[in-house]
Image (tube, rainbow, N blue to C red):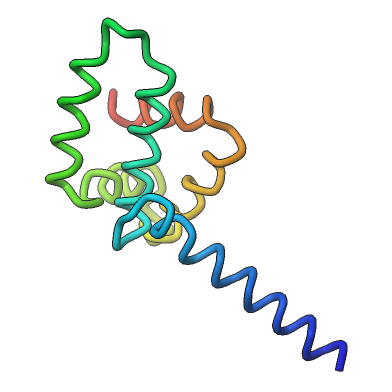
Length: 110
């Protein structure tokens, strides 16, 4: 009985880990969710004078639908599938917003 409960809890945690980013960011892929998460954090942390630049970036990323994040994480981690890296970066950003800003800015600046 305990094995069944442990397996059910593990399955639930796995499903949440997989689907939460896409549900929370209202996207269809983890890389698109990562893009939206980056923009949300950037908008929240940016000074008011950068608001126009951030809004323009949002429009560009809406056109990308995850392609930009996929290319950036693939360049950052070429040996790991981009989808897995997008999930990893998304969940890391949930606990460390500043890390996401530093990492995203560094990846874009390359």
